[in-house]
Image (cartoon, rainbow, N blue to C red; front, side, top):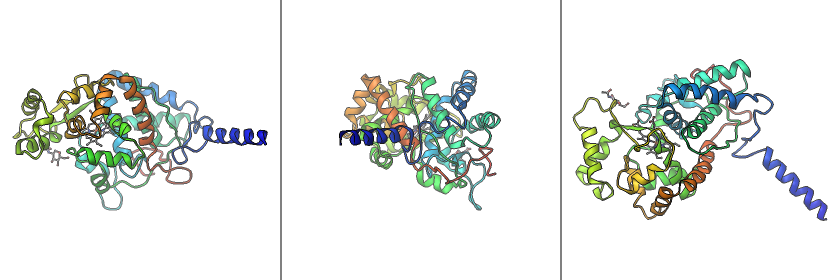
Length: 325
Ligand code: HEM
Ligand SMILES: *[C@@H]1O[C@H](CO)[C@@H](O)[C@H](O)[C@H]1NC(C)=O
């Protein structure tokens, strides 16, 4: 009886360790078919990051925008839409999405080493994971085995990607659907410790603050002035000009939370999470405890990266990430 129980438990643990997690993904997916994969991704990105410090932020946002539209399936990389629809990149929500070509470059390297094995969707996740750790963030283990979709549509992107002025409730709803707790939802927004926001995405909020539909209570007066001066209303330049998301825009740290807690959140959601009763305590905790932020970010990242994935016989392995071939 005892022995039987032990055998059962061992079998269960073995399955858990090797096998199915996040709907058909596994931690040893490429152990046989492409053991060099993680090394290839890391080496390529080290080169890219050396010459372009904006690349980590771009690759982390690229992962979110891929995963948020019909799951993490590399649909954002496709140059062509489905039928006569424009592709995801034509959506205004994807303004300033960059570094899709970096994924193509990594894919080319993996095709030389392990042809036909590695999906573009897994490369998007691995690149985002490296972006976080190479910027000083946590090292995250991610399960692999995603496959690529054949569909890309700007309409799906418009419908699925959050509006730049999304509020706390919208955001909590989005991440609850991916199985995240409130703590994890607050942590994944900590991705805004990297990178910038273009004025195109700030002007809406400035208008709402001006018109009174968003309370100025959550924003520091000096910071509001800084946003107004950086992003003037009558500029033709708002797709080009930008403000940093936090003062250390190249470092993955917990400054984002400290800024939000002091009324210096750039986006509406950054600001409102600091005072909303559901999220304020977590925001304040992360602002003083970077380890707690890193732990919650890591588990949230794995959940985001497992959302709506194609596995097994679903989807395809594209040969070139931006083309349907
Ligand atoms: C769900 C609520 C979210 C909203 C409303 C939101 C909105 C935005 C907006 C408007 C920008 C500025 C883009 C620009 O103007 O260039 C931005 C940037 C960014 N977002 Fe988010 N975001 C959300 C969640 C996330 C998540 C979950 C991640 C990653 C896991 C993420 C990662 C980033 C990064 C890294 C940048 C900086 C990009 C760069 O500098 O290239 N965001 N976000
Ligand atoms: C700025 O970007 C938006 C969204 O992609 C686009 O609709 C608009 O035409 C662009 N404006 C300029 C001046 O390029």
